[in-house]
Image 1 (cartoon, rainbow, N blue to C red):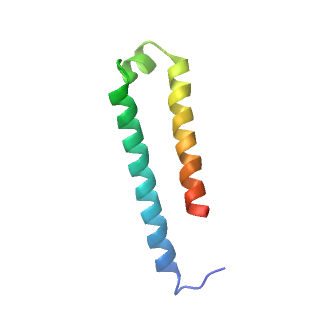
Image 2 (image 1 turned 60 degrees about the vertical axis):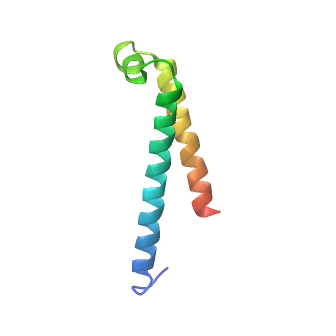
Length: 73
């Protein structure tokens, strides 16, 4: 467990990891958008491209596992 003296330290480290995780996700998504020769939004929303949605979701899950391992490692 923890005492109240360590709570601010835990909250700050949690916020730092959350911000870093969000930043990594944003950079990864921007890279995917820039690399692909088509509109990801159009393919998923208008054309109902389920395969592309699964690939994007897999990338997000992969990044989540890597970030989680870095935090707990």
